[in-house]
Length: 319
Length: 306
Image (cartoon, rainbow over all chains, first blue to last red; front, side, top):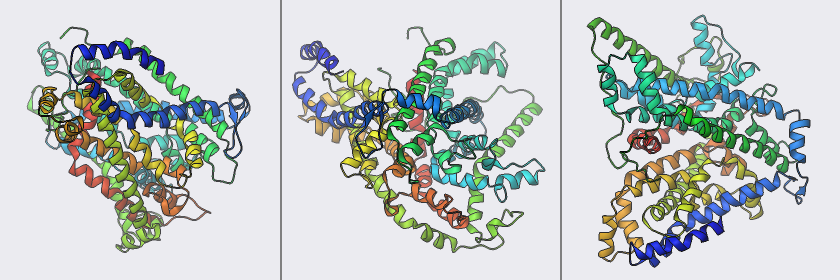
C-alpha cells in the first residue's frame, strides 16, 4: 500500500507542477494537514485492528496473558467441536433470509405507495420514517413489551380480532420471526432510499409508456424496476451486511434464547469475547468467529456485485 | 468517481410527487382514492399505535400494567410516573452522559470528515486517489472486526471504562461515510470560488473556514444529524467499553433497566414514561430538520445511481 502510494507520487507531482497551480507545494502540505486526522484514524482504528484481529483469530487468548499461537485450531473447534456455532450460523442465516427479502419488498412497496399524488402523502411518509429516527434501544424495549404474551399490545389486538395469539419471543419457533417483525418496524429506512431512487426516474419514460398504452403492472416491471435496479443492488448489499451484524435486537429482546433459536453470530461473538457472567473471555476464539462473519460479508458483497450485471440496468449511451 | 450529489445543494427537499395516474372514469378513481387512504391509515396506525400505547403504559400505575385482560386506556392517569420513572432509572445522569458523548463525537466526526473531504475534493496531492479509495473501502469493513483488538488497546492505555473510546475515534475520521459525503459535496462547488479567494490572498485555512464551511452548510448539517443518530443510538460500543453504571449513556442504562435481573420484573410504567423522554431529543431534531434527514439519504441514492 505504502509502496503503491510512492510509485504514484512521481508522475502526479509532475502533472501538478506543469498544469494547474503555481503553489502546488503548499497544496500538498495543506492537503496532508487537512487529511492527517483521517489518515491517523485509518491507521489506528482500521488497519491496526484488522491485522491484529486476524492474528488473534489464530491464537488462544484470554486478554490477560499473552496470546498463544494455535494456527487454525480455533476454526477447527468452531466447525467441528463447538455445539453452539452451527446453531448461531443457522440463526444468522435464518434472520437474513427472513429480513432482507421482506425489508426490500416492503420498503419498495411503501416507497411506491408514498410516491403517489394524494393529499396527506407527506404525513404517511413522515410517519413511516418515524421509527427509524427513534433510538434503537427505545423502540426495541418498547417492542419487547408489545410482544409480551400476557399483557402486550400484539396479543391484545389479535385477541380482540379473534385471531390466533402467539408466545412471540418466548416460543422457539416464533422468536426469530418476532425479532424480524421488530426490525421491520424500521422499514422506513429502506423506503426512503427507494423513494429517492423512484423520484430520479425520468418522467418522459412514464409518459412514453402511457402513450404506448402500458398498464400499471407493466410500467412497474418494465420501467420502474429496471431503472432503480442499481439502487436495488445497493440496498441488497446494505441490508444483508446490516442483517448479518444484527446485535441490538437479539441482545435486548431474547439474549439468544429460547434455546439457541436467536443466538446470532454477533451475540455469540459478544458472549465469547466480553462475557461478564464470570466466564473467562475467549478473545482468540471470538476473533475467529469475527473472521467467519467478515468472510461471509465479503462473500455476500462480492457475489452480489459479480452477478449484478445480470439484473441491473446501466445506461451505456453517451450523454 | 466524479459523480456529484446533484440534488444536494438545492435547499428544497428532494422529494416531489410524480404526476398523478391517468384519469379514467370517476368511479374507478374514487375507488382508487379510497383504497389508497385505507392503506395509508393502516400504515400510519402500524407506526403510531405502538407509540401511543407506550404513552398509555407510561400513564398507568405499576399494577394496572399487568391487568388481565389488558385495558388499552389507563383507568386513572399516573402523571407521577414521569417524575418517579426518570428518578428510578437515574435519567438525568444518563441524559447528561449521553449529551456529552454525543456532542463531542458529532463535533469530531463532522469536523474531521469536512477537513478530509476538502483535501480529497479540492486540493491536488500525491496519493489523493489512493486515500479516497482506502477511506471508501473501509466503509465496507464491519465494525465488529476491530472490536476485540481495540478493546485490548484501550484497556492497555487505561481507556477502559472511560468515554474516550466513544469519542476519540470520531476526531480521527471515525465515519468514512461522512468523508465520502463531504467529498461529494465539495466536488459540486465551482473551483472559481477558491481561485478568487486565492487571488485575494486567502490561505487554505481561510478558504476552508470562511468560504467553504458556509457554502456546505446542508452537507455538514446532514452529517451532524447522522452522527447524532449514530452516537445517540449506539448500544454495542458503550456496552463493551463502559463498566460503571454512572458512566453509561442512555442506551445502555435504559436497556439495563428492563433486562431481567435476578428474576425481577421491571416497572414497565416507569420505564415507558422515561422511554418517551429518551425519544424526545431525536424526535425534536427530526421534526426541526426533516429535510436534512431525507436529503442525506437522498443524496446517497442519487450519487450511486448516476
